[in-house]
Length: 380
Image (tube, rainbow, N blue to C red; front, top):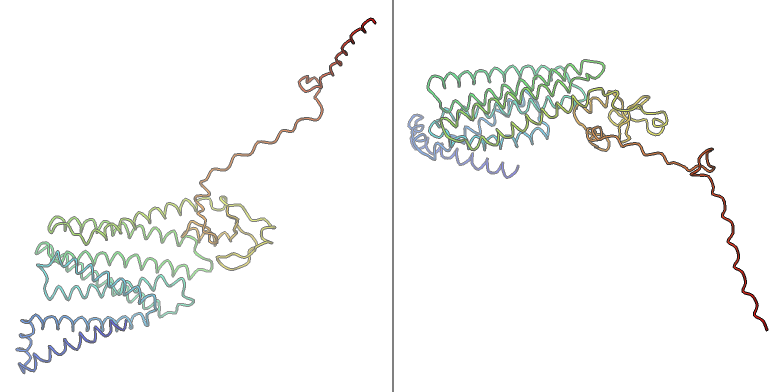
């Protein structure tokens, strides 16, 4: 981070020196601006200063709407920002003929919108782990959601109308990205509603995870349809977009994984009470602490691996994972495994023969063989 700060500081000083030199030479605003615009070095300095100004503005807005960011949020934000900038630079190779100053401003605004969507998603995912959520969190969430939804709708409408009027241009990219952001915002706000309902109930909402899986499947399906349509349009008008293949494959894999997880969860939740046996009193005397909720158990369910848990805790866990919380044994594999065949009983031969059974009756002893006759003695 210190090296990045040094690079940014050096770039800022160099850009500022280029701008100040132009104003010192021309002494007036308009001639100095013309000189900067007509110079490649001057335009580079202007772009760099605008980028720093946009970064400072985004940092201020993030602090106003979200407060201080946590360490994981900052780390994820930097990772996603680097990936987004790389993909944007690759997309510019396709739309290089439409590259203008206005498109640069729109790309900066699009990247800022993505950053706000990412932070909002991180905050919603953090709701289950937060010990207390005040009214300020809910107010900020609603305000940010409304603002982001409005901006997504405005950008999508402007991009679509411009594309319909002037044909396929760079606005196809902005329209596609804004619609994808709107779908993501729909999924983020849906998860917030599910979390809020769960927090207001006295007992945990058992079907929350299942509804969340349905929402994820729906959002991934919509994103996959958008990616396929956008990919087809680019292939038709611009050729094969290499940079989009990775996103298309990852979206398809995410959708397939969501569907498989949903099917496995529904299969696991069917007759959950009858799938696992009840723990006996001897089992509870040996271990009566549920590892999920850390509370003592009066009644529990015993898994095939031998570990015991509360039934509600086990239900909520198995809606997200399909393994034992303690030993990580795949429970679906154990449940699908056929039961071993009962071992044949060992047959013990009766000690005395049954009546009428001649096969087992003792045979009579054979008479002793007669002794051989001795030879007669010879005469003297």
